[in-house]
Image 1 (cartoon, rainbow, N blue to C red):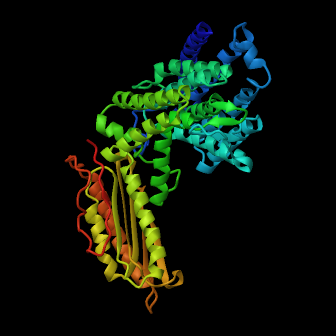
Image 2 (image 1 turned 90 degrees about the vertical axis):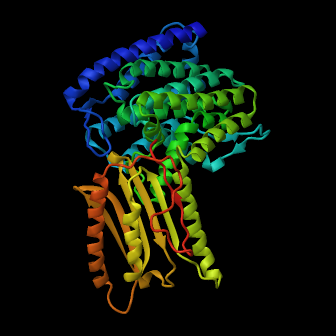
Length: 521
């Protein structure tokens, strides 16, 4: 059986290599290319897309050979109850690649992509791939999801698809992660209590195709996966993770697949938190992902790939050992140690933790204030998400205007992916008025015809109309945009390596301040 796996893995490598080379030549002829935009996409010149098509076609071709040629896996893939569920992976994969191609070629709205992802996931669920129970920490009785089984499975698939999609930010990363994740799941499928040989062969074939594709995607890449490819990898790995960790009918070993997915889960969770807590759209782009942070620190794509490969291999090894020794604590401890290391060292995740802490404090204050006679002071939070330019002076000017205009709230969010700069600050004080007694302005900040952030200002209504105050504030906003332009054109200061520095213009003792600076090293 091992010899057969090696043969089909090698065939998959060659097929992936040949089809990728072919797609690389055809893609520019039909306009399937990725163009730099000097905002987020910073590569040089147009790059062929369509890597997802090559990966899909190569995988289908080799799996077709496995199902036709005499070999130990042929009967397993055809028999009902084993390979039958995985057959639904084909139409689901086709749907996700078509959605990705439309996005790569024409650019889809975020919710259009989400709708396509839901369709692909629904195909898999209708084919019987559903997480009905989970087993963790050696539970004698697995925890049943009941009516929540399908929603939880849908959430898993959407999370898997988007986690890999978000990680596809530098050459070779998504493909490399796919190889490690799917290979680990294939091995896991062979060592669980009831081996899933169909998952083994599909997993190793898919890994082989990705290895062949990486010949052209390893930095410097000559073809990109595109959304079609990254979402396909997420869909396949997410599906095999469920099937490869089955302890019994519908019962999934929870810790092992979560450990395998630890790095993508960390990055995607941080991205969602960062965007929601700063008021950005969940679909907005930035360069604050784990690989961007490591690129700032390590200086080259290949070093980033090596670092993330090492982390993934650690979490994958922990997953395999936890399955083999039937001890979920191994996976939990290793994954927790890696996440804590990233946060404590300031490499990744600290800003998101501070954002979450700041939001929790604000919510807590809103509950406590009506129940106490003690005066609640100003809440002041300044968090550097990325970069080293001096946004604090601009922010302090805004805070200084609070008294003059009787403001009760100021939120500033700056997002400049091309400069690898991100800054978020908020200032709030209790005003004793309900919403009807307040006014609010939510203004997009634009520099050189590009949106670079948002400024939200709220104030108390006096006896006169707030229109005069708003007119004066428009002058302040124009000044802010002018300062944004000046600061963005300055050379970024060299980092001193400090992670926590005082805020420029420290607030009053009553103010509550949170500061986080994460400088590129």
